Length: 248
Image (cartoon, rainbow, N blue to C red; front, top):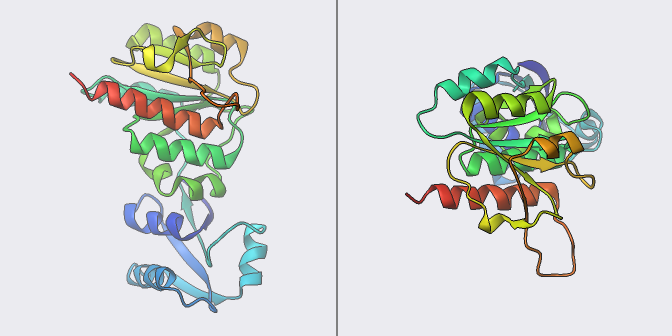
């Protein structure tokens, strides 16, 4: 955990609800009178959080112009886990693991959206490299709408080495996504221990990551657009995996 700004109604409410991070102080737009903000302030007041009325311009300066929805808090943000935590996590599972791997996803909005989809589909951990990739920034946590607290986010030094360890030590089947893959997502067998690998925005997976995958799949595209945003593609892949895994 580390002290940082928590931006937006969903992110602040999640911090209060899950108790995974402590809020020390909360600033709010004193001119706003909407019900959602009033309810949040009541929850924060009941939790003993110090409330500070402010102007919208002040909140804009604090957040660099982000969409703060009239509320900014200061407290402990969720932190990424070290690589060693991955083995510990997998050792506690009594079901085949489902992992989401993000190879070089840098945009915090995409990372937050991927975390949200991971939470919705029962992903056990999201894995990303430490270098040339996004971390749990205030924007990513805001977009995640609480998923940053519920889904373990593991940052590793060497992504290819981690994938090979998952394959060897945990028998994880690594499936990468690529527009030129011959196999369709809907033809792939996504049962059993699984890691779904999504490439970076615009560039896709790095070559070494691609070569490490056990299989490559593409998402069928019926229109004129040739690719999807990485967070949208991740959601499609995760729900297909969840659909298959729900069947005996």
